[in-house]
Length: 240
Ligand code: PXP
Image (cartoon, rainbow, N blue to C red; front, side, top):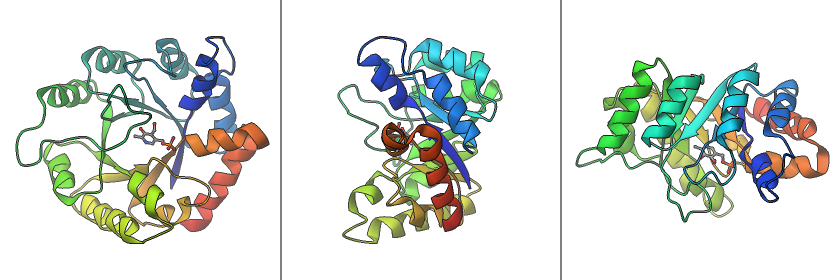
């Protein structure tokens, strides 16, 4: 199981004062030292946390692998083709949302949005691996496979919001993971995963990558980022 740490919220703290600390690049280096397999960052259109310079700097400094999350908007897609991250995760973006609240609309029952098709074509032509962030929904998985991308990231937000009351969302994730692998897709998962809820998702055999941000960065305020990453690493590893 690969563990990617999303460092967006290091930048959230910095942007609260528009200063130069804390530094997401320094945090990423410590995550790598503590056993992260990769670093994830989301350059949002509104630049609320990660800035263009963070992406440029991270592309130079990451020694593991960089997963750049981006919406299917031409200027950010072009930037991705220039910095060539190890992979990109295409996500939906709505300006008013607090975080990425649902998976991508792949136009099931109709046609995918042209700008999504353009983004997939541009990134593929640049030789960059693409993962689509989608809800754990079987028709959406089939559409992702038809689009020819190598991977999907299953949105674990519903699971994170409901796991204390019911196993239904976990069961949906399990079925989605099996379906995605059978369709030839690599399976990633993320959103809302915490120290308390990560293990059942890490135990899904088809899931090969987790992307976790807010919980680890939050915990790092009290225990330090290396300890926070090590703790998550050990929970994930012991669940697999
Ligand atoms: N995966 C994707 C595609 C995301 O958009 C996010 C949030 O930026 C995450 C994972 C990480 O979510 P969280 O911060 O809740 O761990």
